[in-house]
Image 1 (cartoon, rainbow, N blue to C red):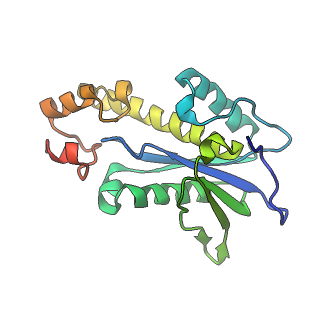
Image 2: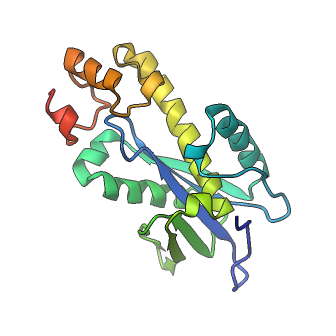
Length: 200
């Protein structure tokens, strides 16, 4: 895996990734991370390949070691208004804006880049398919996005216990679909997603 590196112009590299594009409920979250080359984090990988406990431990280490990090999201209303891809790009842009240090280049997991124009400054960008398992900064962003989104879903579980969001994190599991059939959707559901639309 590529560790944090300085861009050729001397600027810093931010890794960006998202979590939660597929679920039927909850926000889509994105994180941006600028790792510190002098404080590498061991064991980074695609968040989906890590246990929940391992993700949480690595998230703590990333936040403590990184030069800068930020997490942002787009809520279900924005997902419905924009579509989930556009909402994901918006969440990524918000995460980049949240960094306390401005990177020179942004590396994003996948094949698309968010709008990287900020005022009169245009950041360089690179979309990397499989980047969450190949580039350390993107893996770190993957872990932060996933752990923050999971915590949001646990909080939503307390507000809407009938859906058991803490168990499935909003994904379209058999349990979640059964609860949707029984109770109908709540404001945290994505009404433009077919399984939700069918029960509303």
